[in-house]
Length: 281
Ligand SMILES: O=C(O)CCC(=O)C(=O)O
Image 1: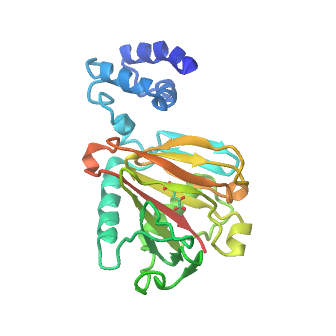
Image 2 (image 1 turned 90 degrees about the vertical axis):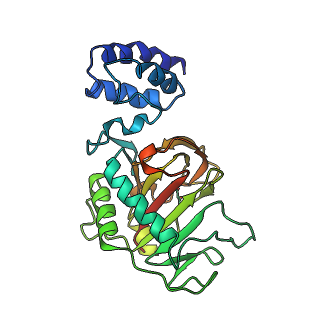
């Protein structure tokens, strides 16, 4: 925090000069955004003509929403965080799709895992159903209502492929995700630390990536290592962020420790978070 605070004068100077589109501004803002400091700074900034309307609210992440990729980050080997990847219009369209699927005839349900515990998300699977009792993928929801699983829509698969390519996963030109898990997190939603390891051996051995898209409220996402006991790094995944892990990171533990209510872009009109994860079986 003290190190972040040291950045504040530089950011203020850039705000005063009205150069909020500069890469330096963005880099500083991105770092500050991870702390509460950004909230107070942005509250103040909303009174400033240099920044009003662009970042003068808590919904700061949307300030650059009409720019395709505001920041691209190779976070660790095989881990790529494309912050603010989706425009606000793209997020709105995806939220409508997710809502329609989640509330549709074979929509979301709260899975019960094999130990008997209920998950803290509503889930719907496309392409293949992940059975929480067997930890296997299958064609119908055998643990719930036996409804057949709809395919992953082509445009969603294409979006995930594009994200994987932009994240640098170009080694598999034919990569086409055939599984999409859509999770809905309410204000108390969370997901325990786990590995995504129920896909085929070939897919995992090849390090084919998992592509995740966040929509709505910010999530405190935990990224661990390859062993459960490895330290975890908390990361704030915001609406519109894409997060990709594959290659050497394919089996890294990860989870969501909490949702931060009230942080979704207000234009999305959601109280909670959708997350889509694409994988190839
Ligand atoms: O919601 C997230 O960001 C993570 C979801 C996840 O880990 C999963 O679906 O396996």
